[in-house]
Length: 168
Image 1 (tube, rainbow, N blue to C red):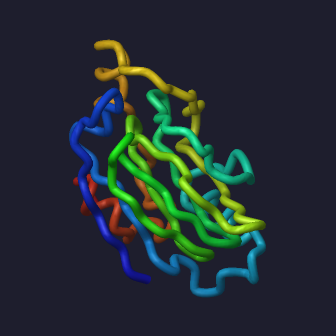
Image 2 (image 1 turned 90 degrees about the vertical axis):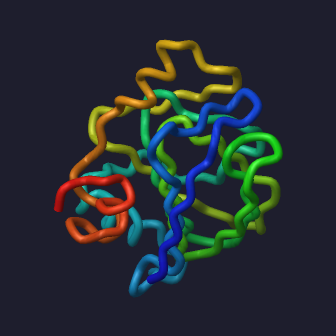
């Protein structure tokens, strides 16, 4: 598995996270499970990120002010824009994972037929859909939102711990 981390500055009305980078994991599962979303659900849940849904990714720019989000691509491919309008474009495919800190803008520009994602969040965090500039209170919440002590893909030894400056 290869991972890539990158920070996104505030852009247009999308705050992005002030400190934490986005993480992109390529071919995150040893055995992707032939498109079975249960493989991602088991991995995320076992690492303290309870899965909450199976679906695609919205085709409009949005961010979450109340939750960090991990997206496991179970089937298909997609072209995403991260960071808000005019942001960074990434291509994802089955087996890939995108870890989005709270405040990170995202949308699907294009996806293959049958594209399926598993979405998971830290315990107690309920995602919201934001499509407007954040209030000062939202910005403070985004910056201070807690996260589990484990990487959603690799547990206690994953890249999130180093990239998000967590103790090992």
